[in-house]
Image (tube, chains in turn green, blue):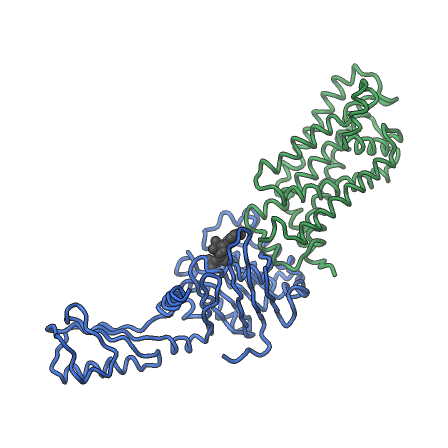
Length: 254
Length: 317
Ligand SMILES: Nc1ncnc2c1ncn2[C@@H]1O[C@H](COP(=O)(O)OP(=O)(O)O)[C@@H](O)[C@H]1O
Ligand SMILES: [Mg+2]
């Protein structure tokens, strides 16, 4: 039995929190993405003719979108659950008639919702700078939702694990962003010299960027099946970890 | 004591050992009547907050069982928690949120449909209505506490925990709190409060439980506890020191102190016997021709009872 009212209360409360910090959460990613387009798309991209038959500016759209999706989903969800732990407000969640399902749907749902709104804004921003089309809009939507949900789950785990603000920012900043940069956002993997093209395949983000690029342009470094499979696997892993966290009360209950 | 019929909360053998080995609760048995105000009295570190945490879901219990509203909390926690409210000891909420929104959120979180009229009622009863659009961080400490209480009341709990509700609050808020608790009693809400303010337990509670070092030492009706453990203490300052007591005083629990300059009485049982005996001692002194210049008499408070119990327990341990 799911407590829908409680779920909705958490969801709304989280979105209200986002609304309060609208500048940081919307303006800053849009600004960052615009800068990427200006620097890589216009300035440098002008000297690069085409990548895989695509205009360079259009080529980097899925990667840049992925960059924002990963870091924003992770940090929003992690802050969402870390803040009540930090302020002491967690007592109320723990004493409320909510379990793992309500908490996840509420926190992760809100973080994922925000990521989707951001994704839409970034795609619109991209239109200002480059011409691009989306070959499989339906799959693109599904894929974006899947990634937003998975990394919001990862963020949730992070927020439960972290004991301080530095740790909270460590994973997005020190792991996700570099891996995304190296994961084919700005280049196609087969542009890399051997053995780097093989080594790059050990980077899980390669598959995410590649999968999203497939939904945009119908062509990618690795097959969409592998990308999708890995994303779903990651989603399932995160859910399993969170279910364990709730069952054992790790870092939540004393 | 008679077992309580159909208790709203029934705790059996509750034990909590924190990681690291500290036993914060040691096989606690406690039954709470529907509609009563129960005061859990104990010094810092006694285990009061841990006990509340065990019922409310912040603390994983090591052993024992908790039944609420007739059902085992281990299985029925979801429905039970909808009917339980908690005002924690420490302030803890989203400081950047506004008062009314935050209180409305609490109502929703506990599964209740939005009800602005009810939220208004709660806010008004706590003198928060004028502050409803304020950010919580801008309120005074006392006002923040009121917000915490409003949040706990927002879903109309039938069982309410107040963890040290008046620790560190001003006199005005303490009065308000007591009024609030009185009105909750009128509405039939069961209240369990922890405190180390004796006057609070004496003022508010129907029953009192004394806890120390994780052990519930004694649970009784407030009056019965006074009766059982009450003491009268009286000191007669004598006009001139005496070396021995007259025969007529042998029957009473009196002693000489300060080289015979002070006669002390310690006795009674909280039923008024002590007061009567002090009067009899005074009469006997006068009849024996022993004058006294001052008389200092006091009834033991719950606090004395408490200190007494804790000390006795300490000696036994
Ligand atoms: N999370 C915790 N981990 C370890 N020990 C704890 C924890 N919380 C409380 N304690 C210890 O348990 C004992 C009881 O604490 P508590 O229930 O807060 O007492 P009270 O509320 O009566 O002051 C204290 O000795 C305290 O130090
Ligand atoms: Mg306490």
